[in-house]
Length: 179
Image: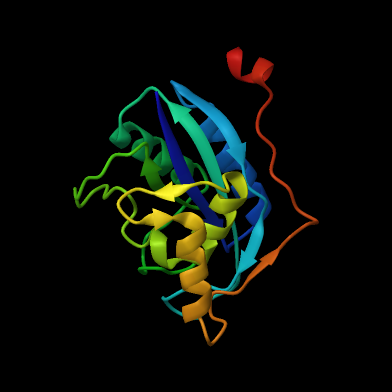
């Protein structure tokens, strides 16, 4: 079993339905056991064209599969919510990124592990830190230190996050996953 961290984001359509749907679909994957899900944050888009705000969260799972199997599960969840890839970093109904897969490091262009920009993105680091205050990004540093560095460097407030206490994601109940 490997512990994996997945980043979830949506800025088109029913953003919360897309995030909850992703949690449900990813949790139901073969050999996948959900561990925890972060609070939901609203964030401005980073890079790309002018677009609406994102809802972001992190899902932590244990998986018996291989990294590329988890990537395919993530892509399957995106397809279920009709994700289209027309513009890099453009608006999307659902974005699921594999951030880490255990301590695996790999520079495969299809699935670079850990995610090559995770250390630069508050919308990944903050929710991840909420799920695990002792988290470490393999090959980099503790997530808390990385987040502090991003916040210090973000003098223009471009990566400001707003905790959405009015929104919450839930993991499927174990009994529902067994059937």
